[in-house]
Image (cartoon, rainbow, N blue to C red; front, side, top):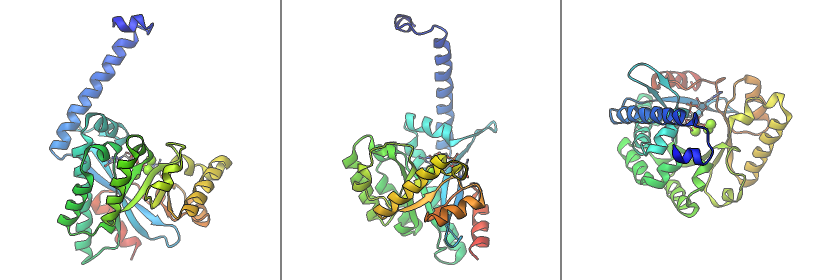
Length: 281
Ligand code: C2E
Ligand code: MG
Ligand code: MG
Ligand code: MG
């Protein structure tokens, strides 16, 4: 408090800061229990090939309902998990759960169901966990080959140790996995790393996609990203496709895949499987 006064900060700010810190800590404690007791769930959102309309992949997205019944968004609890280190056990659980769901779909299909699974990896996980070993062991245990998995990373992975991250990414490629750069366009403007890293897919952030038909600047950015990806030999996925017209326009512009509410919201495993069976029949 004394230091806050000396630095000229408002005194009313202090109690607010304490309240926020206490709320953060309460959430962290609750989240720790939820992770330990495996009370998180995964929902799965389809990703469609824009040319054929077929579902080629599902993205696994973490869901958390607290014991008193509140549904907390991952945009809230993932940052808390990252700050507290809980992202390591949470991330391992997500990898195992997604693999187990995919293996279940294969069993239901009587062989390779032909669909792939995308899992989000946090930069903290890449720094602190032995993610490559975890994924390799999980795939083996589930009887899946590495080509069935896509790992979604954000540009923030480049902050820490680019050389080490590049090694980790190469090791993931060595397992046969696909690497996607998530939320592309919202991170760093340094494009040099695109050349150096083995990225297969750019996921165009939904802040550019959703409103692009009514906003020339957004459309220009989307076109530029598509051009960049094509020139670098990468495929593209548009996030936030909310209308049929948007999906059609993106397909005509050469975007490979689309993900968004027009196809489906993230669904539980059973609903995702029904949708796959129906759409790809
Ligand atoms: P993300 O990886 O970019 O995932 C896409 C987000 O966009 C999801 O939000 C999805 O529900 C939402 N979305 C999809 N289509 C549309 C659309 O048409 N319109 C709109 N408005 N939104 C759409 P969600 O599930 O709330 O997840 C938010 C973020 O939390 C994810 O963004 C990802 O960064 C993070 N996250 C979720 N699960 C995990 C996880 O298991 N591990 C890690 N490290 N991060 C996760
Ligand atoms: Mg993602
Ligand atoms: Mg994304
Ligand atoms: Mg996003």
